[in-house]
Length: 293
Image (cartoon, rainbow, N blue to C red):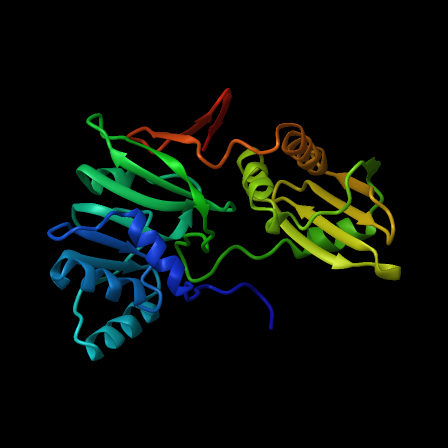
Protein backbone atom coordinates (compact mmCIF):
# COMPACT_ATOMS: atom_id res chain seq x y z
CA UNK A 1 0.00 0.00 0.00
CA UNK A 2 1.28 3.48 -0.90
CA UNK A 3 0.11 7.03 -0.27
CA UNK A 4 -1.72 8.58 2.64
CA UNK A 5 -5.21 7.80 3.98
CA UNK A 6 -7.87 10.38 3.16
CA UNK A 7 -10.16 9.67 6.12
CA UNK A 8 -10.12 7.94 9.50
CA UNK A 9 -12.48 6.79 12.23
CA UNK A 10 -11.81 8.69 15.45
CA UNK A 11 -11.39 6.76 18.70
CA UNK A 12 -14.82 6.95 20.44
CA UNK A 13 -13.49 8.34 23.72
CA UNK A 14 -11.81 11.20 21.86
CA UNK A 15 -15.05 12.04 20.08
CA UNK A 16 -16.77 12.29 23.47
CA UNK A 17 -13.95 14.47 24.81
CA UNK A 18 -14.19 16.90 21.88
CA UNK A 19 -17.96 17.19 22.26
CA UNK A 20 -17.54 17.82 26.00
CA UNK A 21 -15.18 20.66 25.20
CA UNK A 22 -18.01 22.07 23.09
CA UNK A 23 -20.23 22.36 26.19
CA UNK A 24 -23.33 21.17 24.37
CA UNK A 25 -26.72 22.00 25.85
CA UNK A 26 -30.33 21.61 24.76
CA UNK A 27 -31.45 24.08 22.13
CA UNK A 28 -27.96 24.84 20.78
CA UNK A 29 -27.23 24.55 17.06
CA UNK A 30 -24.14 22.42 16.40
CA UNK A 31 -21.89 22.08 13.38
CA UNK A 32 -20.07 18.73 13.52
CA UNK A 33 -17.10 19.21 11.19
CA UNK A 34 -15.71 16.05 9.55
CA UNK A 35 -18.61 13.60 9.46
CA UNK A 36 -16.40 10.53 9.10
CA UNK A 37 -18.36 7.45 10.13
CA UNK A 38 -21.21 9.56 11.52
CA UNK A 39 -20.49 8.56 15.12
CA UNK A 40 -19.97 12.10 16.39
CA UNK A 41 -23.19 13.26 14.72
CA UNK A 42 -25.11 10.40 16.36
CA UNK A 43 -23.79 11.32 19.80
CA UNK A 44 -24.60 14.99 19.22
CA UNK A 45 -28.16 14.15 18.17
CA UNK A 46 -28.61 12.10 21.32
CA UNK A 47 -27.15 14.84 23.54
CA UNK A 48 -29.14 17.72 22.05
CA UNK A 49 -32.35 15.72 21.76
CA UNK A 50 -33.34 17.26 18.43
CA UNK A 51 -31.69 16.01 15.24
CA UNK A 52 -32.58 19.24 13.44
CA UNK A 53 -30.09 21.12 15.63
CA UNK A 54 -27.18 19.06 14.31
CA UNK A 55 -25.46 19.73 10.98
CA UNK A 56 -22.63 17.38 10.06
CA UNK A 57 -20.26 18.25 7.22
CA UNK A 58 -17.52 16.47 5.29
CA UNK A 59 -15.66 17.18 2.05
CA UNK A 60 -15.95 13.56 0.88
CA UNK A 61 -19.30 12.69 -0.77
CA UNK A 62 -18.81 8.98 -0.13
CA UNK A 63 -18.39 9.58 3.60
CA UNK A 64 -21.44 11.82 3.89
CA UNK A 65 -23.59 9.40 1.89
CA UNK A 66 -22.47 6.36 3.89
CA UNK A 67 -22.84 8.21 7.20
CA UNK A 68 -26.35 9.39 6.32
CA UNK A 69 -27.34 5.79 5.56
CA UNK A 70 -25.91 4.56 8.86
CA UNK A 71 -27.61 7.33 10.82
CA UNK A 72 -30.92 6.62 9.12
CA UNK A 73 -30.70 2.95 10.15
CA UNK A 74 -30.55 3.99 13.83
CA UNK A 75 -33.28 6.57 13.48
CA UNK A 76 -31.10 9.69 13.48
CA UNK A 77 -31.53 12.39 10.85
CA UNK A 78 -29.18 15.37 11.26
CA UNK A 79 -28.58 17.72 8.34
CA UNK A 80 -25.78 16.11 6.31
CA UNK A 81 -23.76 18.41 4.05
CA UNK A 82 -20.96 17.70 1.56
CA UNK A 83 -18.71 20.76 1.44
CA UNK A 84 -15.24 22.12 2.11
CA UNK A 85 -15.10 22.76 5.85
CA UNK A 86 -12.75 25.72 5.39
CA UNK A 87 -15.12 27.46 2.97
CA UNK A 88 -18.44 29.15 3.57
CA UNK A 89 -20.45 27.21 6.12
CA UNK A 90 -24.14 26.25 5.69
CA UNK A 91 -25.78 28.34 8.38
CA UNK A 92 -25.23 29.93 11.77
CA UNK A 93 -24.22 27.79 14.75
CA UNK A 94 -23.90 28.10 18.49
CA UNK A 95 -21.19 25.44 18.57
CA UNK A 96 -18.61 24.34 16.01
CA UNK A 97 -16.74 21.18 16.96
CA UNK A 98 -14.15 19.97 14.45
CA UNK A 99 -12.87 16.40 14.23
CA UNK A 100 -10.37 17.55 11.61
CA UNK A 101 -7.38 19.84 12.14
CA UNK A 102 -6.75 23.26 10.61
CA UNK A 103 -3.52 25.29 10.32
CA UNK A 104 -5.36 28.23 11.86
CA UNK A 105 -9.00 29.12 12.57
CA UNK A 106 -10.78 29.87 9.26
CA UNK A 107 -12.48 33.25 9.12
CA UNK A 108 -15.58 31.49 7.75
CA UNK A 109 -15.96 29.63 11.07
CA UNK A 110 -16.04 32.90 12.96
CA UNK A 111 -18.56 34.36 10.51
CA UNK A 112 -20.82 31.33 11.01
CA UNK A 113 -20.49 31.31 14.80
CA UNK A 114 -23.40 32.94 16.62
CA UNK A 115 -22.73 35.70 19.20
CA UNK A 116 -21.31 34.04 22.31
CA UNK A 117 -20.83 30.79 20.38
CA UNK A 118 -18.01 28.34 21.02
CA UNK A 119 -15.60 26.54 18.70
CA UNK A 120 -13.40 23.52 19.35
CA UNK A 121 -10.65 22.32 17.03
CA UNK A 122 -7.11 21.01 16.78
CA UNK A 123 -4.21 22.65 14.97
CA UNK A 124 -2.61 20.81 12.06
CA UNK A 125 0.65 19.07 12.89
CA UNK A 126 0.20 19.45 16.64
CA UNK A 127 -1.53 17.82 19.59
CA UNK A 128 -3.21 21.10 20.59
CA UNK A 129 -6.95 21.37 21.28
CA UNK A 130 -8.15 24.97 21.04
CA UNK A 131 -11.42 26.07 22.65
CA UNK A 132 -12.58 29.63 22.09
CA UNK A 133 -15.75 31.68 22.60
CA UNK A 134 -16.83 34.35 20.14
CA UNK A 135 -16.15 37.93 21.19
CA UNK A 136 -18.10 41.10 20.37
CA UNK A 137 -15.59 42.15 17.69
CA UNK A 138 -16.26 38.97 15.69
CA UNK A 139 -13.12 37.17 16.81
CA UNK A 140 -12.79 34.66 19.62
CA UNK A 141 -10.91 34.15 22.86
CA UNK A 142 -10.06 30.96 24.76
CA UNK A 143 -7.16 28.67 25.50
CA UNK A 144 -5.20 25.57 24.57
CA UNK A 145 -6.61 22.76 26.68
CA UNK A 146 -4.33 20.64 28.86
CA UNK A 147 -5.46 17.38 27.31
CA UNK A 148 -4.34 16.58 23.79
CA UNK A 149 -5.55 15.26 20.47
CA UNK A 150 -4.42 15.06 16.87
CA UNK A 151 -6.60 14.70 13.78
CA UNK A 152 -6.08 14.48 10.05
CA UNK A 153 -5.75 17.84 8.32
CA UNK A 154 -8.48 19.47 6.25
CA UNK A 155 -8.37 18.92 2.52
CA UNK A 156 -10.17 20.61 -0.36
CA UNK A 157 -9.88 17.93 -3.06
CA UNK A 158 -9.81 14.16 -3.34
CA UNK A 159 -6.43 13.67 -1.68
CA UNK A 160 -3.64 15.26 0.31
CA UNK A 161 -0.43 16.57 -1.26
CA UNK A 162 1.94 13.68 -1.98
CA UNK A 163 4.58 12.80 0.64
CA UNK A 164 8.09 14.19 0.18
CA UNK A 165 9.51 10.93 -1.18
CA UNK A 166 12.06 12.48 -3.55
CA UNK A 167 13.42 14.70 -0.80
CA UNK A 168 13.55 11.68 1.52
CA UNK A 169 15.64 9.72 -0.99
CA UNK A 170 18.03 12.60 -1.68
CA UNK A 171 18.41 13.42 2.03
CA UNK A 172 19.31 9.80 2.73
CA UNK A 173 22.14 9.94 0.21
CA UNK A 174 23.49 13.48 0.73
CA UNK A 175 26.19 14.43 3.24
CA UNK A 176 24.98 17.99 3.73
CA UNK A 177 26.15 20.05 6.70
CA UNK A 178 27.30 17.72 9.48
CA UNK A 179 27.12 18.31 13.23
CA UNK A 180 26.63 16.45 16.49
CA UNK A 181 23.50 16.92 18.59
CA UNK A 182 23.90 16.52 22.38
CA UNK A 183 20.63 14.54 22.39
CA UNK A 184 19.84 11.08 21.04
CA UNK A 185 17.38 10.64 18.18
CA UNK A 186 13.82 11.37 19.25
CA UNK A 187 10.59 10.13 17.69
CA UNK A 188 9.24 13.67 17.61
CA UNK A 189 5.60 12.79 16.96
CA UNK A 190 5.48 10.76 20.18
CA UNK A 191 6.74 13.73 22.22
CA UNK A 192 3.58 15.82 21.97
CA UNK A 193 4.90 19.03 23.54
CA UNK A 194 8.05 19.02 21.41
CA UNK A 195 6.15 18.13 18.24
CA UNK A 196 3.57 20.86 18.81
CA UNK A 197 6.14 23.55 19.62
CA UNK A 198 8.28 22.62 16.63
CA UNK A 199 5.28 22.80 14.30
CA UNK A 200 4.45 26.30 15.51
CA UNK A 201 8.03 27.32 14.64
CA UNK A 202 8.15 25.54 11.28
CA UNK A 203 4.75 24.32 10.05
CA UNK A 204 4.71 21.56 7.46
CA UNK A 205 7.59 19.34 8.62
CA UNK A 206 7.21 15.68 7.66
CA UNK A 207 8.80 13.36 10.23
CA UNK A 208 10.06 9.85 9.48
CA UNK A 209 11.90 7.31 11.61
CA UNK A 210 13.78 4.13 10.85
CA UNK A 211 16.54 1.73 11.83
CA UNK A 212 20.01 1.92 10.33
CA UNK A 213 22.90 -0.50 10.15
CA UNK A 214 23.75 -2.24 13.40
CA UNK A 215 20.44 -1.26 14.94
CA UNK A 216 21.09 2.48 15.01
CA UNK A 217 18.07 4.76 15.46
CA UNK A 218 17.42 7.21 12.63
CA UNK A 219 15.10 10.15 12.08
CA UNK A 220 14.41 12.43 9.13
CA UNK A 221 12.83 15.87 9.01
CA UNK A 222 11.60 17.00 5.59
CA UNK A 223 9.97 20.26 4.56
CA UNK A 224 8.26 21.35 1.32
CA UNK A 225 10.69 24.29 1.04
CA UNK A 226 13.51 21.77 0.44
CA UNK A 227 14.96 21.81 3.95
CA UNK A 228 15.92 18.42 5.35
CA UNK A 229 17.72 16.80 8.26
CA UNK A 230 18.88 13.24 8.93
CA UNK A 231 20.00 12.12 12.38
CA UNK A 232 21.52 8.85 13.61
CA UNK A 233 22.12 7.54 17.12
CA UNK A 234 24.22 4.39 17.27
CA UNK A 235 23.60 1.70 19.92
CA UNK A 236 25.08 2.79 23.25
CA UNK A 237 25.40 6.46 22.22
CA UNK A 238 23.56 9.38 23.80
CA UNK A 239 24.22 11.85 21.02
CA UNK A 240 23.21 12.01 17.37
CA UNK A 241 25.17 12.62 14.20
CA UNK A 242 23.16 15.11 12.15
CA UNK A 243 23.26 15.90 8.44
CA UNK A 244 21.09 18.73 7.14
CA UNK A 245 20.63 20.97 4.15
CA UNK A 246 18.26 23.28 2.31
CA UNK A 247 17.29 26.85 3.21
CA UNK A 248 16.66 26.11 6.92
CA UNK A 249 18.39 24.03 9.60
CA UNK A 250 15.44 22.03 10.88
CA UNK A 251 17.42 19.99 13.38
CA UNK A 252 18.79 23.16 14.98
CA UNK A 253 15.19 24.23 15.60
CA UNK A 254 14.44 20.85 17.16
CA UNK A 255 17.48 21.02 19.44
CA UNK A 256 16.51 24.55 20.55
CA UNK A 257 13.06 23.26 21.52
CA UNK A 258 14.56 20.32 23.41
CA UNK A 259 16.94 22.59 25.33
CA UNK A 260 14.03 24.78 26.38
CA UNK A 261 12.08 21.68 27.40
CA UNK A 262 14.96 20.54 29.62
CA UNK A 263 15.82 23.95 31.06
CA UNK A 264 12.26 24.99 31.93
CA UNK A 265 10.74 21.57 32.62
CA UNK A 266 7.93 22.18 30.14
CA UNK A 267 7.06 24.00 26.94
CA UNK A 268 4.51 26.84 26.89
CA UNK A 269 2.13 25.40 24.32
CA UNK A 270 -0.31 23.59 26.62
CA UNK A 271 -2.39 25.94 28.75
CA UNK A 272 -1.63 28.92 26.50
CA UNK A 273 -4.19 31.67 26.11
CA UNK A 274 -5.70 32.01 22.62
CA UNK A 275 -6.91 35.12 20.83
CA UNK A 276 -8.40 34.91 17.33
CA UNK A 277 -9.08 37.94 15.13
CA UNK A 278 -12.19 38.04 12.91
CA UNK A 279 -9.85 37.23 10.01
CA UNK A 280 -8.64 34.07 11.75
CA UNK A 281 -5.17 35.20 12.84
CA UNK A 282 -4.60 33.09 15.95
CA UNK A 283 -2.20 34.16 18.70
CA UNK A 284 -1.08 31.88 21.52
CA UNK A 285 0.47 33.38 24.66
CA UNK A 286 1.81 31.97 27.91
CA UNK A 287 4.23 33.75 30.21
CA UNK A 288 6.52 35.71 27.92
CA UNK A 289 6.03 33.36 24.96
CA UNK A 290 3.98 34.32 21.90
CA UNK A 291 3.13 32.12 18.92
CA UNK A 292 1.15 33.27 15.88
CA UNK A 293 -0.63 30.99 13.43
